[in-house]
Image (cartoon, rainbow, N blue to C red; front, side, top):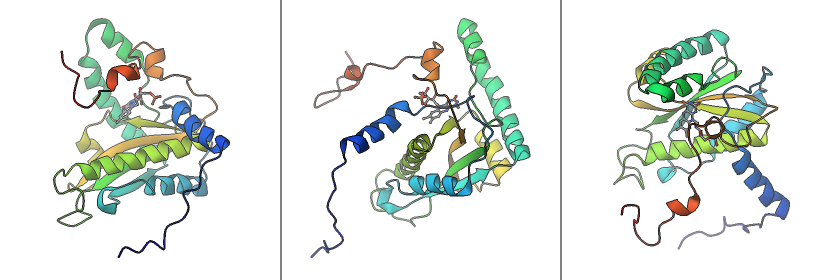
Length: 226
Ligand SMILES: Cc1cc2c(cc1C)N(C[C@H](O)[C@H](O)[C@H](O)COP(=O)(O)O)c1[nH]c(=O)[nH]c(=O)c1N2
């Protein structure tokens, strides 16, 4: 018989609590340039990482680690790796799209006082992991859930976060001493903010727009192709 004694009431959220959850979701932004230099106190950073650590994970595998970088010289080295990759990325667009790309700021590595590299240890659960037996990528998806928890908790604490993925994996690995068996999932920049874009910056700057939700919902089976 399952032991149900650990169950508690699923206490309903008050209106204010519900509003706060949606406020975090809808006003969260990817931050690149609005970071203030103020340090993030250790206890606040710990709260954010603990929120990340309470994300769901396949088989309760908790495959994540958080490499925290604060030293300006460490962040400077990461920025140089970004810059190399970003030059290559710019060259992959042509014409006006390339000029727009070059005008975008796509990271806050040096401006944000804290950078965090989030990794996934694919071997943490042993050979066979509950829920991952038929799709090994579930551990990576779990790690992304942790990053989203971190992003929303940061928003609630007045801290902006930006995800930077314009790197060669090998550069990040070498700079942070990450062994081959560990997957690099996300590189994040965090710092206090006073201002945030009301809409995604990439929309404000004409790079892309939000797809109407109705176009993305299918009834019963795939209906995306004519
Ligand atoms: C996996 C992944 C990777 C990246 C991003 C996001 C995610 C989920 N985003 C941020 C992205 O551009 C942003 O989320 C969207 O433009 C939507 O904007 P808001 O997050 O709503 O502000 C991002 N932004 C950026 O400026 N440089 C980058 O390298 C990346 N990389």
